[in-house]
Amino acid sequence: MKFQIGDATDVALCVGLKHEFLRCDDAFNDFASSAKMMILQGENRRICYTTYNAYARFIHHLYEFILGAVARDRRDTMQLESDIAERYITGHAQRIFTNRRNAILSGTAPAWENHISYYSEKVPHTFARDFRQFRNFASGHVTYKRSDLSLTKFYEHSHKFLYMLYYDAKNWWGRGGDEFPDLKEITAFSVLVKDVPPTQP
Image 1 (spheres, helix red, strand yellow):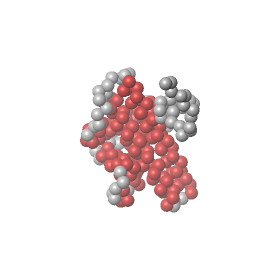
Image 2: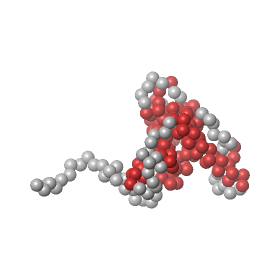
Image 3: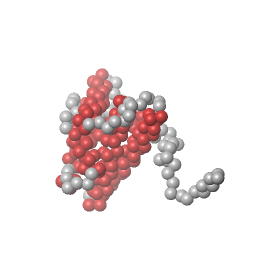
Image 4: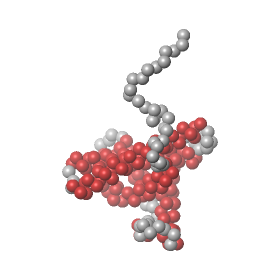
């Protein structure tokens, strides 16, 4: 469905995007806590399982958030073909890395910035496809492929790209201030039984 920025569909989509990014942020923070415990206390099956699940949720919510952001950029809620979504993701990651490299080369990068060697000149052409595959199989679909798909290798090769996409989105879609955002029915959810005023005859 086509829509315009600022109309009812756009406002509703923005609530969905905010919710999805907050879920992504929660998953990343869970992953960071679990990974820290793994580093400090050592590995065992339980901590590996917990860390895997948090990272899989991070991948899932980041991918879904990006697809929602693409819909907003296109002003169209129609689902994208996988190859088009992959081109958008690769292009966006490339812009982020190019901007970081240019800031380092021009001397305008902050003092805490990574060395330029951290930022690839080209985002690997397989990155977006692998991102989608891990979204599908590590978190989404139950399949025989899951037990043989190495999230460790994906993390080693792709985490810096995922983190840059996440960090870039956090500036716009992360929590701002102390008050939790109003997400309509999402933040109105309740399991409490409430008095309902009687209907008028």
